Image (cartoon, rainbow, N blue to C red; front, side):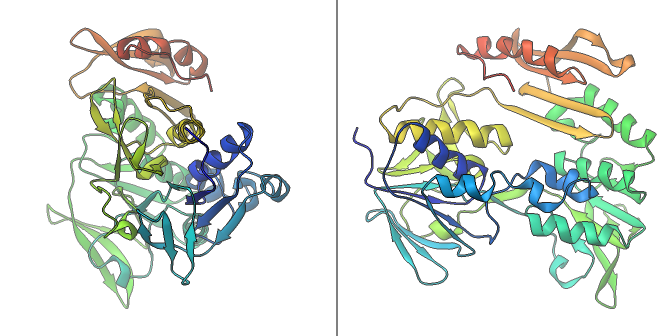
Length: 396
């Protein structure tokens, strides 16, 4: 396969930047353009709900690379101009400002957009968290608020709840799961996470559905639950998941279904690839389409696509990995934790706040979880890879 005459990366994200860096690292000298919807140069998202939100970091510290390093890539960065259309045959991307950008290959890295509640946009004091600007706006609101209700009990909701509680706010978390992150951690470990939160003063309303928001004078005053209760709030974070940013692909002829659908090489069509949260590709070892929303996948998938663009195409078959930091707990998960998986503690002891757990389903290892034992968990990641029949991810 010949290297493309030029590469256009749509999305100035971690996945987009990693694609460019990997191309240059492999010796690609052709023109590269990065098109970003935001005005900020590429930055890291995991710190937004923790270090940036708490004020421990200034915003510039979240930048993935200093300006000098970006300049050294020899790529053109066009920021603050979202993509609005794609001609898949001509490999041409149309932007909001009226530009038409063409290249020999297009890499889609447009990420996701937060879901919102009905009526949310009409009320002040209701926030989402996806971008750096979102984080700065939410931080400013936290500094002048006393009561926060977090709608959503996944990773983002739990992280923001922990951060806000350390800042001294009265925090309540509402969600449909029996405990925060039960779908990602399994019920036993999620139960420990619930104890961690309640031990720090976070109020949990598990198994709760949200009917809507209440307000007065155009400002949010509370969250109404399905059981008729209303939780008072002067600030609300809505963290109920996110949808892939694929609206701009309407009419392109590409298959869009919970992301841009790709083959096992992360290729959506000839000359068009997808990386990061927006990509839904065929994982050959799982035998199914998969879309992952985590920082590690954004990096590893981008490196795989860059190699494929330069002739090194091969199936992308990672072991899923994510981490979360909440209060004094650092939790890492390799693989997945199905609801019916059997859990066994293989190192440490949950009673001490340091342990590693292995999860099996039908005798096969599906996941390994570490709680404040990152090294020990990383050493067991190969068990998950072996169950998939492939190598383990690189240590992190």
